[in-house]
Image 1: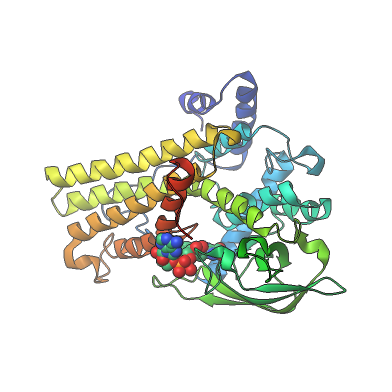
Image 2: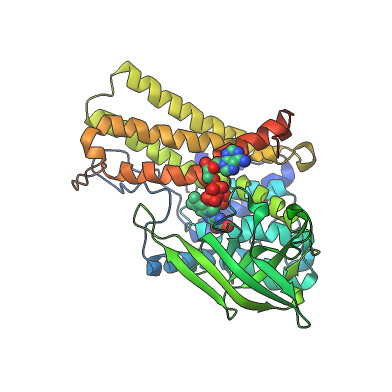
Length: 414
Ligand SMILES: Cc1cc2nc3c(=O)[nH]c(=O)nc-3n(C[C@H](O)[C@H](O)[C@H](O)COP(=O)(O)OP(=O)(O)OC[C@H]3O[C@@H](n4cnc5c(N)ncnc54)[C@H](O)[C@@H]3O)c2cc1C
């Protein structure tokens, strides 16, 4: 980042003098630690061809990636960038959320480690801890997540409760010493290496289902917690089944009042949806680039129908990005929360269409792993796109949510 123009571009992301001073501080910090990110090479046969939407690595490699992300988070914390909008009383910087967004926008131009392993902890768990946690929970978990000491996971879905999360059956029973948890969670991303899980469990089976749920912070090394990795269709195993058998927790591990779990869960899920666009921007650019070189390779890049489809994909992904930026800039009190999911629906559908166009261009090479560069990678993309449409709420569920809360259409009969 030596060219003056690039630095000026980054400074231009700031709004007003206060943000500009902050941006200059951020640029100096990042320049000290990482080189600028160079756009992925988009010529046929060179550079990485992997197009997986979910992790396809070994357990060891995943742990290594987590260590790298945690190391970078620690460096950020020490320099005052680990919790930019966090409360000062807990070591945060106490700045407005726009400063946090500005930091992330600038950081995106530097070759920092992949922060995916920390996303659930920082984006989903920490905000609800700050909103509902006791000083003990904030200190013990939110602070340590931001300091890079811990990795978090989300213990929400169950074999019989995914979209209908309020139907969770894992139960917690109160005892003289605290609580005893029993049940099973599934699709736990980060499950095999997370330190702490945010769990939604049933504490009162006698009241309507949404009212009988409570949240807990479950240290993943508590006796009775067993994590079994799930092998994915695409070869990797980035999530797990989590069994809870007589897991004893102190009452201090409870987040919020008994029965308040559903409201907190919805806030946590809104946090999860908020971070989808961040994650996908760079990958989107690479996928579009690879699709373009694929069209050239198979001599279809002059076909007006192919060009039209590619352009539509480009527009869809960039408008999803713009939508996300717009939502991030809108004050929370002007949103219902559901708007944050619009870009996830657009991105997920576009991923499916990107895969479909690649399949058409490739013909049989799409399905056969011939070892040829840039071909079979698209199969993994298309299979991963299915998962992307489900994660963080399926398309059907999100569309119902948007219809009811944003468009004000009549509610779905229950
Ligand atoms: C990549 C990935 C990562 C994940 N990570 C985690 C994690 O870390 N922690 C965690 O707890 N969970 C995680 N999940 C699980 C995810 O939250 C659930 O898969 C999701 O909520 C859907 O639940 P389900 O799989 O049980 O599907 P179901 O709820 O059984 O849905 C099956 C189908 O029926 C449709 N459907 C269901 N109800 C309705 C309705 N009322 N109206 C219309 N259609 C409906 C759905 O849209 C879907 O098409 C992850 C999932 C994926 C794919």
